[in-house]
Length: 140
Ligand code: IDP
Ligand code: MG
Image 1 (tube, protein in one colour):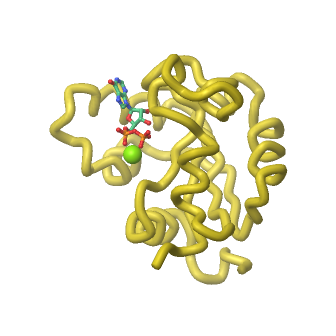
Image 2: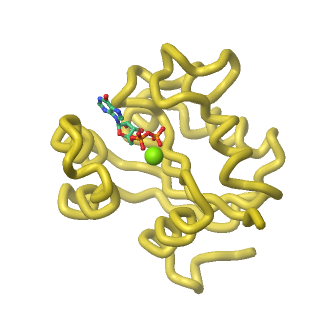
Image 3: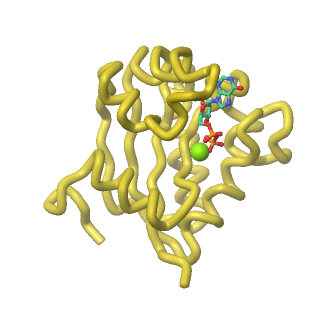
């Protein structure tokens, strides 16, 4: 059974490029409800912890440096089939390959600086949400 929550971050590139409002609008327009939200900044240590699954990949150092380079917006979203529905809305990892009209196609800079994160499973949505929010910060 698929869950009804996913976790996203508006990444430092999109925050720096002034796209917070436009991305949140796109998210709301597509039927996602915001149940938790935080404007914050990851330390390099926390970014490394969040992306630990990628630590053997060649781009890991670059990813950690980028994700700790500026503020992010961390958000928990609610919608039926949230994980899969949100992955469709954000598009492929590489914006050059992302479908037209997706968030990454419209707002990302490149494969590394790609505007938004989206959880890839219900289990990871839960883990990633707990990484950023305590129970009293979630309003479902
Ligand atoms: P996803 O964000 O679409 O799930 P993942 O493969 O999980 O993509 O990679 C996590 C993040 O690592 C990407 O969103 C992107 O920021 C970064 N990344 C992925 N592949 C590359 C790459 O080839 N070069 C640089 N950064 C990358
Ligand atoms: Mg991923």
